[in-house]
Each structure stands twice: as structure tokens, then as C-alpha cells.
Image (tube, rainbow, N blue to C red; front, side, top):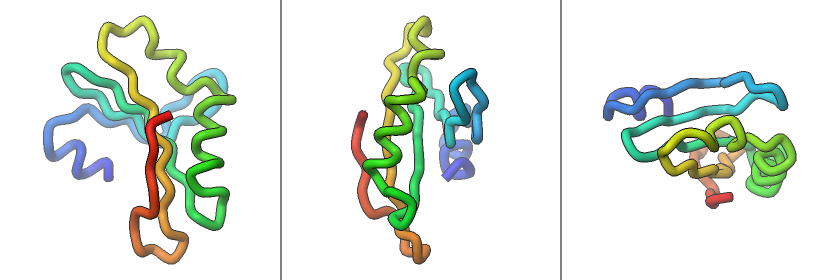
Length: 89
């Protein structure tokens, strides 16, 4: 995923460390900052990703930025078949 975002001109940071934990991926564009948390289906899926974003306050370090911050929980198939579900948190 990071390769695709880089290829289309986004700034990408994988496994970004913050005071409360480690964000799976931060994707920055001119107008947006996307905070992505990915979980496999057999590891809690979309609900676990959503809970982690909320409890660890992953969007907090970006609140001072003028760009819109969008947190997205993503569930991936544990058998490697790709995206199962996603939602904005």
C-alpha cells in the first residue's frame, strides 16, 4: 500500500511512533492527513482497528495541522485475499 501511495505523490510514513503507540500508516496529501490502522480478520478486524485508533488517540498529534485529518480502520483478509472492510473513524 505504501508503494502505491508513494507512486501517486503522497508522503507516506509506515509504523509512525507517537507517545501512545505506533500508527500503521500515515498518508499525507496537500489537503488531507490519513491515519490508517490495519488489522487482519483473525486479529479483531475492523472493530479492533477502530478501537485502537480511538483509545490510543492516533489523530491527536495532527490536530494542529491545517489539513483535514481522516482516520480509517481497515480490515484485511487473514488468508491474503485482500480488503474485507474499511470505515472512517
